[in-house]
Image (cartoon, rainbow, N blue to C red; front, side, top):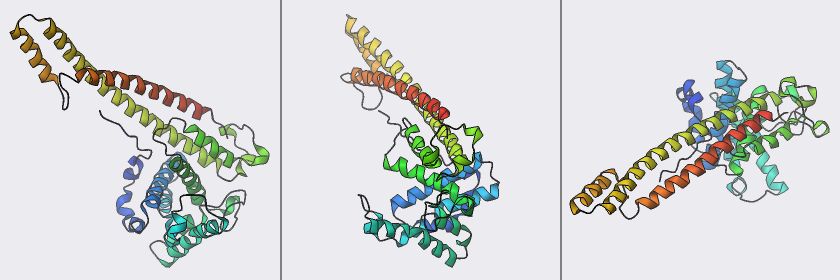
Length: 314
């Protein structure tokens, strides 16, 4: 049975900007990174690109920010593998080493004329608006806007990857976690998204950027719903075909003449798909019927998830 898989990050926007040609050299840098970090960098770049669109950024800035997103973790090339790939929690000493990837990435970009324009993304993507970030502990407007966007995309993808999401069901829990980073502890309260005030802007991450991420996540959830619905249509087609086989089977069993029995069985053969037989078609039909119920449930949960996300407030 077909097992559909949802890709959390559509590359449609990246293609619309024809970034492949522009970033050929920059992307070659990622070839030196481990698979996990490379994939994370690609995800962050994709999210940054789409967030920029909802922020109504100019095309030039969007391209620049997307490339910065690809290169934001390039400094991890210089982090020892035993620290970078450690499965458990890092010790304080190991975390101090890990944090150096920001300055390592900055230095690498500054030494290469082709990478120099994107050094800010590497250096500042872990800075926080309330001054609690690193490496310089910058605050608010001192943090480049591109780094504020990357920070939101980076944090979101890190949570999604850690929790090994395979669907957008319950993805709102991740967004709620990000909201806590957008609002400082002393101002944890409900504030309308369209009425952001200074209290919101003194959190760790940019609330306006986070609001745009919400829209990206809703888009992705709608895309998943469309995939589920397409699969449901496929299931209905298969059920319709197998129910015709079932009818032929019943007629074959009731037929008194061998000629009629063979006629119906030949009809069944013509409708069989690969791997289906007289003995197992009923099992396959039952599996498809169960799959319909499961996918309908997924679709309803995804629609509910969108309603939850739309009600989230920063």
